[in-house]
Image (cartoon, rainbow, N blue to C red; front, side, top):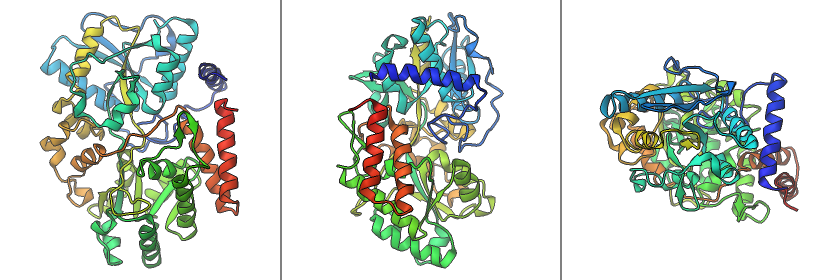
Length: 462
């Protein structure tokens, strides 16, 4: 089945689900950048969003000094976009107006773009839209007429994380401007590590085998798990594999059973679960509310958007610090990214020059935009120079007064670029099921072969 046909079928399914009154959670899972309702970020309001319904039809684009934008998550993404609007109005164009039309989740935008493409009319789209990094390449490929390229925008692209730009750069052309930073952190309770005779430096650049040894000691002494994850939406495989510079796909085809590092990582996850080093929760809410906010863990590894969830345990203020990921062989620091989104100019934009100028002079590197986005919404930049501001250099009390935001930007610049696929989340679902089955006694290679075969079937690969 062609990819475009798959996208259209997905759109029909999404419409049917909405008509049936289903919830708005995206299959992207539960991160605040990826668009799910189970966001790890705190809801800090969203009074600046218009709350308008973009699905009512009609031309949603604006002219003159006004632009419209679709976005989701009032406490996170919308805070960052409003910070950019305030910056541009105050420092560039005093007549500028940005109307933020809040969506309930990323899937709403995906659905509406697909439906607009099916009718051949894009006049229902806004000037600019936020879009998930993991999905954009498929949507540019399927609907090339829906987007305005931004390769000529006045931005120093070398000032951004190469991995972040790899999502929105298609066939050498830039289509999007990054908003947030999905760099993975490994946060540790340093007070509990100290009880066991370890420091944050001991956790940096180690192998997963060394990590397991320490994790067993931590659990035996404190009763806390050194790692945790949502077992149904298991992102561990992807993150651990990216830290090795490897992908779950190769030349557009699933790379699972023939991928020695992936097989090794699955075995490591199962071993960690069996030895009480890693707790695999039953659901996203179990992961965030019971395991992390419930203070069951001494370690959390995920995209940095998980920070507000960690901070919900007020009594642990000053007891956490962050570092990079372990790797299979050790001896080096591992880097990965999980989740994230960027802004794209649609074909319906009536003032492309204004849209490009707005993006260039805000998310293109303005410290005013990124400083405000961080302080108001917890949104961290992937723009390297913006991460050098005084705001980013400040110590964070909850994390033992260390400047974690500057460190996250630094780590993000080292995340390796790997092959991505619009079937990323389908792959995650299949591999998560395989891990659970292996935990329950299944054979590793048999379960991974089943996952690979099912993924190929859903991709239309014979």
